[in-house]
Image (cartoon, rainbow, N blue to C red; front, side, top):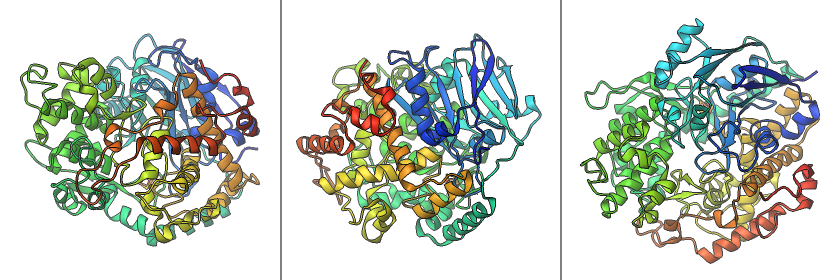
Length: 629
Ligand code: SF4
């Protein structure tokens, strides 16, 4: 008997509107575990490298893990993966909320979507009843209207819904998925893949119960974890202020990306502080399934220009950075309103802020003029221009049609030197942490299989002083200097990436888990044992993380990525012009050397291809000789 998971993968064929249930054995689950592992296995075995990301041959995978839905804080995330329309390579993006546990309670561990529906549909998973329902009436609606209409249509007020907004329908390559309006699979354009399949939403109702191998032990760990969350400083901070609490610290340290990564400090940061947020726009805290941290924020404001509705999801750190400092805007209601628009339209706010920053810098330098922007000025600091541009991008009209391609393709289309201001890695826009202030994170951005990604590795700043003790079980004993890059930092990143990767493999929220937050590796392993009944170990779980990372790498190699794609943005090779990090930069030649050292540590050859020995070690010999298309 399976504990913690269902042993069932649901396949939905949109072309034929049929479904099939596959039942992998325990060995398969123990090899791939969940999230990043299941997605890697499915993408490599079911997508040809030359597949069009927006064509019928792409697949879309929703994957929980063997522990998703266990009653421990943060055991609630699921991942979504496909071939990315933004990067042309491996895509994976995680979200918390309630959708993942609900899918498990409905009896499924993952959903694999194939084909294309001839007309818009949404899929209803009601325990073991699967329906393909007509979505013609909701096609074109924003995410809030979609959620309401599906609740009405199903008569279920508590149904959990993942949907796309109009941006996904229009195939904006950085369109996101949203669940229950407050939680996001934001990165890598999964909204466009879903839109290309004419799939508006997946609605799930699950009334089943997950069996745990040792429920008493699971409850004991859950109690211990809840108690620890109450006093563990990073969790105490998150509970009080949510991620907006990061703004002031990041700005003070000098790595708050400002004006399209030109600077690392924003003169208006005080106005964006958590204190000001809570005084002006905060409505109430929110949470995810069974989480004691409750870091989510909801915002509300009765304002003629920037009305905020608490139902539409609050403004997190990344959204503040995207629509605030990146655009030199210090008006919180406008920023929160821009975020609300992105949420309703289904745009990833990180990529949206980046592409607007790119356009504003092009405008500042005369590369874009009012003749390109329908006569409108789009200068840094102009909040109304930001709001207008979000609407144009979601509609794919006027200048928005070009910007909706993402910074890489938009700069190629514009020409005239626009590439100089287009900041992305592997085609994905940057999240808002300047790597010159945390160099391990810089390595993470360069080496992430999904392109620039801030959740590929734990942030260096957490491992100064005693913070490093959380990583002792992985053999890391020395605190790291956030701004130094040397062999020790590469080792820190190589091992830290595995620590962080556990969260993506097992579907754990980073804000509840190891290494920064309240969980410990010891208790985590005990939890996996108690949930699954497996005599597992940290070694076996970390092996799963490495297997997932290698599968993503092989997928990208097959899609034509090379070591030249494992790099940083131009600005990070240049000296930081001001602030506490003034003069800091990555040396390009040295950085190349650090990447090569990472390849060596990983058992990859000089072209960044996992060696046959590494593939055999990980049980991935089925991928040998298939790495390059
Ligand atoms: S810490 Fe925040 S994001 Fe994570 S599960 Fe809890 S409420 Fe959700």
